[in-house]
Length: 296
Image (cartoon, rainbow, N blue to C red; front, side, top):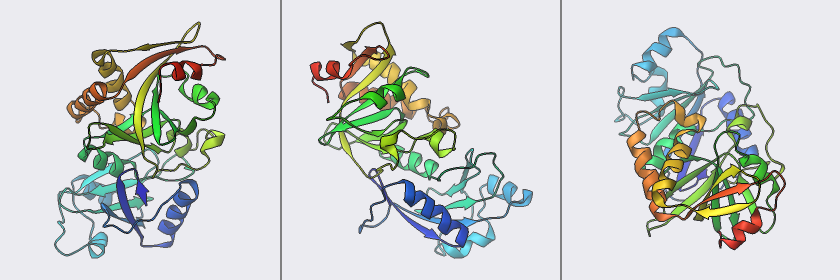
């Protein structure tokens, strides 16, 4: 599976893992690849026990998992993470082999599909990128990111945007440097849909996670009494971007440890990509303002 610039090879070791992957593939557009994978992700069910949880928490690899990886892989120093769905991820800095363990803890969420969030976040940050809490709309290979404070109307606005714009994400996207002085972005699934709390936008029944577009602008949405758009200075943009890079639910648990990296990424984005503040009403034709600004 290709996720933005990342290539993941998933290996299922039992029937439960096979169903996990099937659900993922039904809800994401999954493109195969022929290059070497960035990660080899082993999927399997693991029955919960306090002894096992304690061992994983100290960074040791359970004996059951050792046969799935090469002999020279370490048995200690693994980094565990557990998300709200009960999905446990194990990764190690010295190997591309990783594990996703299903069923190790009970969760109140019945998820519509799963996603390897922690692996993706760690890998994109290795490329000096990050996960941004925002929507992504594209036109002919170029895109705009839309951010807003909580309740700022981001999803509502994206649900009203007109052609030729195409909404490809309403909640999260990956952003990373393109190597030529710009940034690229790829859509990610909506977190509330992942948890089974909300239905997706009708245009997002499937998320094309391998789609990459160049970022032509970033829009900060605010509610207003009329449609107005204003270009922001990089110093103003960096503040908004640091918030957007820090507030996605999958970033909250780890953002304190990586706040310096998040701030540096926000500053790079602010210096590189045009940033605009857009005031909009609940039913105004705000996309005309985007055209006036020459976006994307």
